[in-house]
Length: 284
Image 1 (spheres, one colour):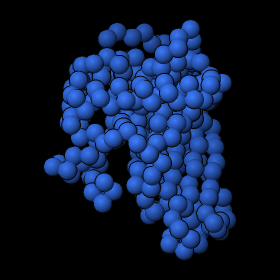
Image 2 (cartoon, one colour):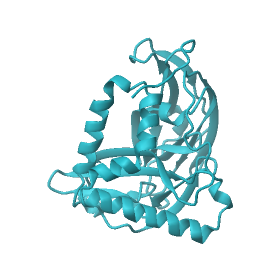
Image 3 (cartoon, one colour):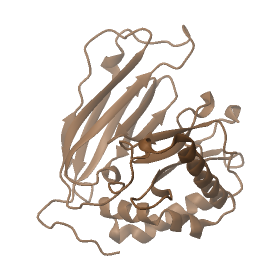
């Protein structure tokens, strides 16, 4: 896979380091990159490049809240002292770490009832300019019922591909998103490894997909993207495409964002994040 980069611009990689508390969602450029429904402290790292379509200003939004019944959460008095969000950059070899921006939090006592939302900006410099969903229709302007019908139909199709083990067709459906992942992460030399890993993750879910249920339609990406998210407490905010493998004690989530290219009436996948974790079978 050959790609033309601006040779005068460094091949920067961007990451978000996370140290948070309670139930949260994190968005970059209005696209969800992290979802947590646990109540305690959580730390982690998220790669950002596939959501950065070109150089310029990028936005990060945090929604942090308490979803437990009143009196059921052990909230600290100064919750924001436990928070940390930092944007880092490295070169394409994940070396030469630089801090790009440390996101600030208020120096106030914990609000009760607890809810916190904020948006920050940072500047990214990358040597590529990918289309992504730029040339997609504004889905917020379409008929809601017609849009939901199309989204549900596409998700049923994708669910069946995974559940039936049709890996090749699933990869073809997501080809544009994968191509842009490779471009934005400078993964050309690692393409075969990436392709093999994704195929294995999809194949591992064969026969284990949960029913498509308890979902809501969610428009994001500043109106250009749409997905289905679970609304039940067990999987709140996760993709509606979930697989549960009891034998391997593994929960798989497939967060797929669809867009509708200009001049088309068909929804197509443009970004996919496949993740897995230890399963909690009390949620089944």
